Length: 236
Image (cartoon, rainbow, N blue to C red):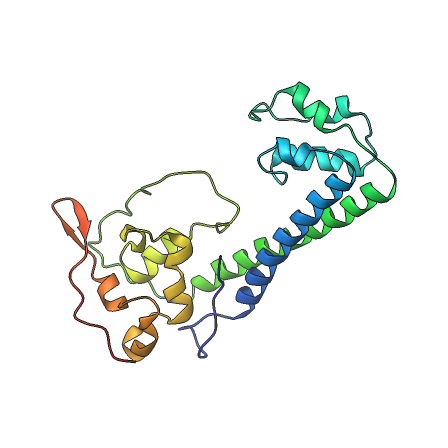
C-alpha cells in the first residue's frame, strides 16, 4: 500500500498529513470501484474483465467508455482492443456479447466515474507530496556519485507515485535507499513519512523499520552494496 506523509511536528521537518489522507483513501476507494465495475459487467453477462488482464488498462477503459456512451455492438467495441492485448479480437468480441439492459450500463457508468474521481485524487495527492518534498534540504555532498540507475527499470505501475520518488529520497537522505534488498521507492519513503530526517530524536520509532541507523549506513564494497552489522536495536 502506498502511504502519504504523516505530520508529526510543525515546520519543514515534516510535511502535511493531507496527502496521507488523500492517498490512503484514494487507493482503497479506486480498488473498490474497480470491483464494482467488474460486478456490473458480470450482471451484464459480459466476460471482458476475465479476458483482459486488467479492466482498468487502456483497452479495458476504452471499451468501458464505449459501453457507457451507448455502444451496443460487440464488434465495434472489440475494435478498441489495443494490439498488446494477448487475447484475439475474436475472443474479445465474444466476451462483449451480453445483456445491455439500461440499468446495467448505468451502474457501470457510476462505478467508472467514481473510479476516475479517486484516480484524480491520487494524482493530485502525489503532486502535493512532490511539492512538499522540496521543503527538505539537500543532503548530497558535493562529491556525491551520480544517481545510480534503477536496478529494475520499468514503466510506471498503478501503485507507484506519479513522480520520481526514488530520486527525491536520494536527494534528501544522500544515499540510495533502494539499494537495500526489498526496498523500493514505495517502501523507502515510509521512514521519511514516519520519522522525518532527524532520526537521532526519534530513535524509539526506528524499531518499525529495523534499525534505521543501520539501514542508512549503506557502504559500497567491491562494486556491490553491502550492509554493516547493526550495532543493536534499542529496547522498547
